[in-house]
Length: 291
Image (cartoon, rainbow, N blue to C red):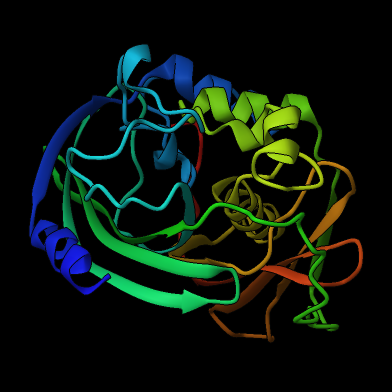
């Protein structure tokens, strides 16, 4: 794969600039999907990670591949491996997005690397996204996207690693097809593993619909916001470890030592297996919906 990888690495350094209006309607859809009672309006500050619903990769129907993603190429390198997933992110929050404002996102490809995993060949693409408005920087993020080979066997349930036992806050999440479909719609994510059960099971070998990694990350950060409403999030990182499915409840946790600004976060399936590993750093004051 050396020659092929060298070609893919020619994408390193490429940049893309996009502009987006922070739509009240989309913010209200996200609030409904995530069960917020407060309704965001023009001038409201968006909670952290809601920026993931903006700047979607919009292509015409004729440019959508069989898995629901846009066809390969364009800004992202044309990695030939068929399965694509969001592997993780590291995010710094300078200021919150404001509903009704215009935001610019500058994206750059930082690295393209090949690895060998237990499921076969992997290619990781690392990107940086810088969001700003007329007043200056808003959010800085590094994102990891992983490409994998086709599934050759049925999914084998993960047996590890085991999630931590000690926690400060906990919440049970009961995913269902409607939640996954609504989040897919909010983020304009056409990946069929999140809403097409037959495709997820028959083509990608999963036992059920797959819960979005970014959705789980958003629920984790929301657990912190609801638990410490007087503080806000300065930074956040997450890594997808094992998939979560809509066939069983899962649990999200946060652990914070007294007086610490560091919060350890994780999601575990009903068998106690670690599925998402995350961390957050807190600061004050809190993000709020209303001015």
